[in-house]
Image 1 (cartoon, rainbow, N blue to C red):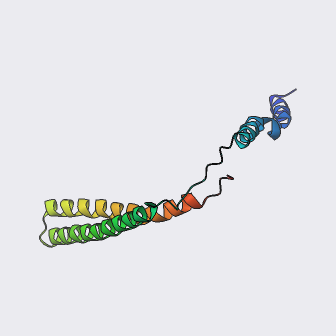
Image 2 (cartoon, rainbow, N blue to C red):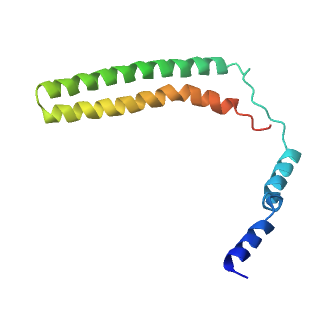
Image 3 (cartoon, rainbow, N blue to C red):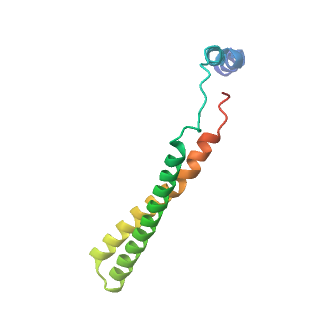
Length: 121
C-alpha cells in the first residue's frame, strides 16, 4: 500500500463527531450547571455610568480632534520652514492622535457588538 493511500484511509477514518465529542460534553455540562445569572441594567447607578462613559467618549473625541489638528499644523509648518525636527514632531503627534481617534471611535460600537452577541445563554 502506498503512503498516499494509507494517508487517505487514515483521513477518511476520522469522524467529526468523535473530534467534537469533548466540546459537546462541555456544553452539556455547562447547560446542567447554569446558575441562572443574567445581566441587570436596572440598577440605580447604571444610568449615571452610561452618562459618564458617553461624556468621556465625547471629551476624548474632542481632544483627539484637537491633537490631530495640532499635529497637522506643526507638520505643515515644519514642511514650510523646512525644519526636519518640526516635521518629525508633527508627524508623531499626528500619527498617535489619529490612532487614538480610531480607538475612541470604535469603543462604543465594539461594546454594542460584544453585548449583542448571542452566546446561547
